Image (cartoon, rainbow, N blue to C red; front, side, top):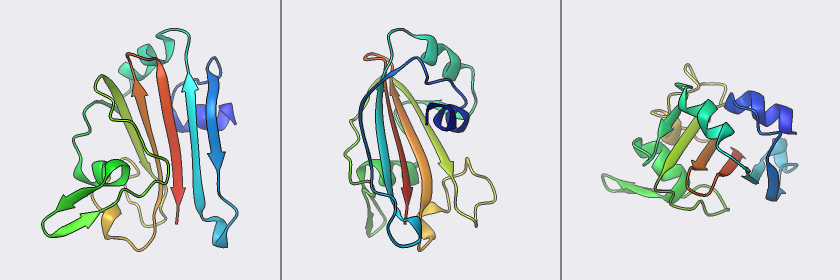
Amino acid sequence: SYEEISVMLGADVSSAEVVSGSDSHGGFHGDGERYMEFQFEDDTFENTIQKDNTWHALPVKEAPIEALLYGKTIGEITYGPYFQKEFPRVEKGYYFFYDRHGESADPFDASKVLGRSSLNVTVALYDAEQDTLYFAELDT
């Protein structure tokens, strides 16, 4: 729902149009992936997330988040990408990460994500040039 996603991201998405969406949850233990793409009419969403310290300017600076979204080789191990839906490489904008795993001590810290046997994460990318939000949740 708009309200649930707005609360998670710390910014209201209700003014956006849903361009595409899918949800494969419902498998074993509720595993699956939810993906949504939102189109905004103006910069209101961007103005809100610019002031929020849970959103970070692109490009993605954290290796675990880059691995989740696009795949990354760290040392001799290649991780990801973990999402079935391919995220665009956004040049100008912001990204958001939230670790919903039960073992997470700090939900905004991605450093331990790749060392777990399961993932429960929320990520979002905001493309400031296109006023487009890409939102996804992954539960494995």
